[in-house]
Length: 240
Ligand SMILES: NC(=O)c1ccc[n+]([C@@H]2O[C@H](COP(=O)([O-])OP(=O)(O)OC[C@H]3O[C@@H](n4cnc5c(N)ncnc54)[C@H](OP(=O)(O)O)[C@@H]3O)[C@@H](O)[C@H]2O)c1
Image 1 (cartoon, helix red, strand yellow):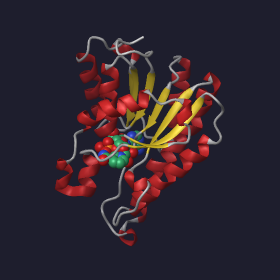
Image 2 (tube, rainbow, N blue to C red):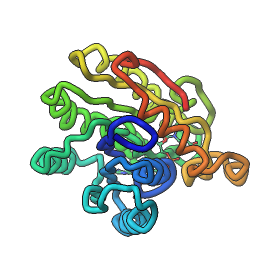
Image 3 (cartoon, rainbow, N blue to C red):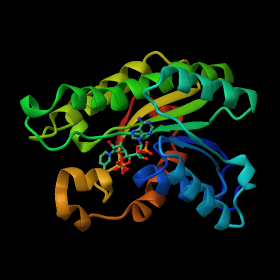
Image 4 (cartoon, rainbow, N blue to C red):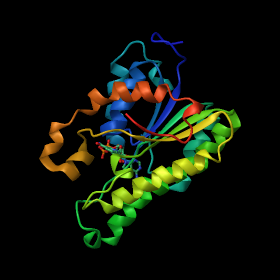
């Protein structure tokens, strides 16, 4: 049981190297939860690991956390990570499918095909890869919460970000459909984080991104919300 109440949980966060994922990883580790953080850029994961192990003394032994390079687009890499965590008896209690990308602002017909593919591959197929290999482990454990990062633009539309909007509308539909498939004990939700000043926001908002809150200011509210999700939330579309 942790100081603030509730048991320590193992939380896997994709896209933990920067932005919202990194801030959430730090917040959860500081509260004493075990973090499994992954992203493509290993250098940023190492910096996160160093930051976490040098901060709170109430954190679990740093060796409990796992920071590992992962490209969510690779189905076989996601499968390997699932196998590793099963072997280590560290099947996550909560998974936050946070890794994401956005197209450069452009009218859809001016977005190169490769860039469109990248948004779809990371934002939709990456989430499906995690569901494919991790939901069965949660089903085996008869418990688990999966949080799929959506967006305000998964529920509304905007010019110049059509590929991104399409991907986040997909996340809303995919999450609600899978919610109808999971057995009792599990829940899957779509979560819009609000608007937060990250690299991604700078890409689509330009310099006005700095008018928005920092990931560090956002993370405590997000952590409270994610840690308090229950199976009653299955299929919900929520907002931090
Ligand atoms: N910031 C906002 O206001 C906002 C609003 C609505 C929704 N969101 C959603 O919130 C999530 C996080 O956004 P953010 O603003 O924190 O974005 P960000 O600052 O651009 O960070 C994106 C994260 O995803 C990781 N990532 C990207 N491609 C990946 C891949 N193929 N495999 C594994 N990891 C990958 C990146 O790490 P590497 O580059 O190291 O792989 C990075 O850690 C996204 O799903 C985004 O759509 C954000």
